[in-house]
Length: 191
Length: 336
Figure 1 (tube, chains in turn orange, purple):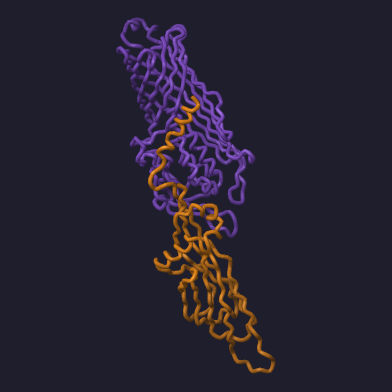
Figure 2 (cartoon, helix red, strand yellow):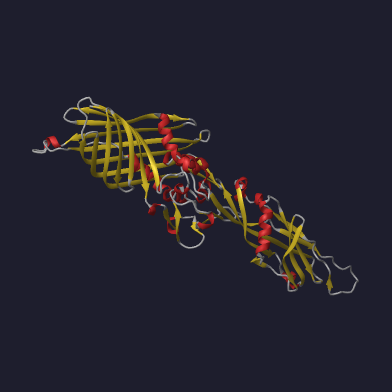
């Protein structure tokens, strides 16, 4: 009798489930740890005339992102069925006082997908300024490229370059933080 | 929390694929919201099981003669109506989890269609930790049982098996017993069931009716089902499902050679309580006894059925119209 009852309970197992399988989407807008730009500005030795400005580009910084670095995803990646890039965004903060008088030749974000690189964002000229979280406009094909790369389990990089025009003398350092946001959906298939 | 899914399935429909549904993500929204969501998602399973479990008590209105008896087993299949394949998610019912877009949405219940996650409304579970972003999750898909090629029905049924003994007593009275002593299932899980029913011929008490060529009885039954599931023995995590049901029926039947046709009309009530006990981690917090909900159902009930009796062997089938219409089939042996 016990076996009959157990069989009756388990009968629907034979029929589960439909063709879509047991899938669900998990999404989160993950902020990378800030990349900090801290540039000491050399002071002119005493006795030299004030030349008005200096060249002092900060070195480029890189941030990285992989699905495994997102806690919300990490437990389900063995059942990963797909990756979708919803949005990429960036934020610049920490620029204060006279730092805001600096002008940019170019600010760029270069996406590094293994040996493949492409420019995500390039801003020519303009003032160096704090930027609240702002979307990066990327094409569908770029989204697809990034999605495929992440789906393969690899870690992508983004190289951030600030190419500054001359820095007014009197500044002793330049400090700013850069954060990139990856709003990503992972499709989990527990079928 | 994944094991809670296993348990839900086992006790509700025996569908182990529930373990693969993301209840472990929903619990991140906190106990109250997870409970509200589970209630909506699981209601058809618990209600259907309760209704099926209340069915199949009789297959004739004629009680056994003194010490006559029958042993009957079968299964009742409660049909989940189309309107119960979705439930309304209303932001106002939740304290933390909300729809990403809009205030209300129709989300699948377990009996709903098996949908692609992209076609189900998305929920946002706010983070409770600094520096941790909100989590967005597609609503949980239905199982889509009827979409499977090998599934023989067009509707979704919740099965409830039964086995019972009927014994004839004095005064055209019969008692029925459904007893399943506690059964231990590997893994430490248990279930048991206890029910009793009384059928009494009322025709004998109504002047002039005794000679009429059919049988007429009153029937009452009470039934309960209890089960426990060990989620994690070491962590003291368990879950419980308890159900009860009562049935009040007037039954009429007519025997035509080996065929007995019968019908009943009356009322039934059914209730269920589901609890998840123990401590569970959900993000930075620990939830204690996170789920405790119950359903109550009452419904008028009318059924019609037929029984074939070949010597002492019986086969019967009936259809009951109630909150979820229920098909019951069974077989047994019947003496006197």
